[in-house]
Image 1 (tube, rainbow, N blue to C red):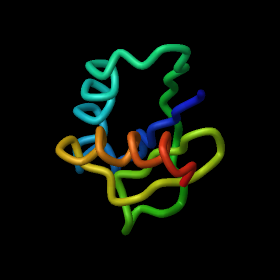
Image 2: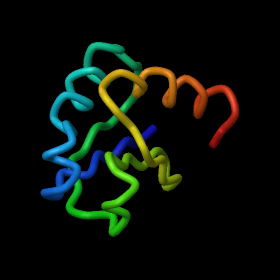
Image 3: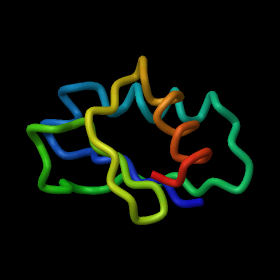
Amino acid sequence: MVIKICMGSSCHLKGSYEVVEKIKEMNLEGVKLYGSLCFGKCANGINIEIDGVLISSVTPDNVKEKIEKFLKEGN
């Protein structure tokens, strides 16, 4: 699984670094974690992409829930 986290200025200001730290704390096996430049959805940020699927409105508080939902449902 590949997870890309937007590190553009808007997402950065909204806490994308904290999202990265929360993902690292999850200790997901086989995950490749990358920073990315802007996904072009700044108003909906923080944005992450999991295996090519864009997930918006991510926060440090809900990132675990959003990733678990993706693993369960695939979206």
